[in-house]
Amino acid sequence: MTDLLEGEYQPSPADWVRNQVELYESTAGKEGWYLQDRKDWPIVVITSQGAKSGKLRKNPVMRVEHDGAYLAVASKGGAPEHPVWYHNFLANPVVQLQDGPEPALYRARVIEDQTEYDEWWQRATEVYEPYVEYKPRAEATGRTIPLFLLERI
Ligand code: F42
Image (tube, rainbow, N blue to C red):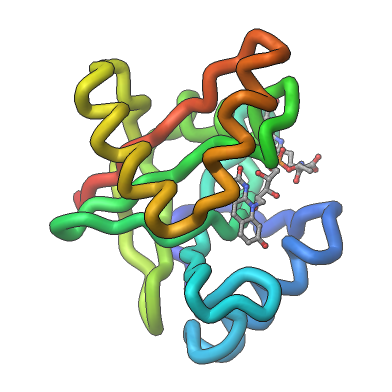
């Protein structure tokens, strides 16, 4: 697979993330398209450019799609801090998203409007119910889970 963004690919230090990306990309999305053994939990692979290094970072996130737009939920399991890719998306909002055989470029923006946030949060929890538990876990540490809307360029 050829990346649409320029830069050297730096695989994730997390085995499960790196392996899922490899399986997904090497099979053009025919394998590795869901989380764990749950075919009702589909994923997409997003490639961003490192905010500091400029290297390409690849992260699967849950597939939350509506009218051709995608949501990236920066949940990190409800951890106290944002995932590192959150900073990459802010610094370099043009990201690559693969949902199926071919990647495409999207522009990412943080959803600020509360109504829009609530609408997309609802869609996210319909795809992946564990987000419901991540939200209070993050909020207990003073963090609101950021939502990025990705629109095709
Ligand atoms: N994570 C989510 O947050 N939401 C999801 O919906 C989600 C779904 C999902 C499905 C399948 C799967 O396999 C993983 C899934 N994950 C999901 C996990 C997700 O892919 C990420 O692993 C997770 O969000 C943590 O992201 P992270 O970026 O914090 O990961 C760390 C461990 C990491 O990989 N760090 C790298 C490193 O080398 O330490 C990247 C570092 C990086 O990008 N550096 C930047 C650079 O310039 O290169 C610097 C950025 C800066 O300015 O600090």
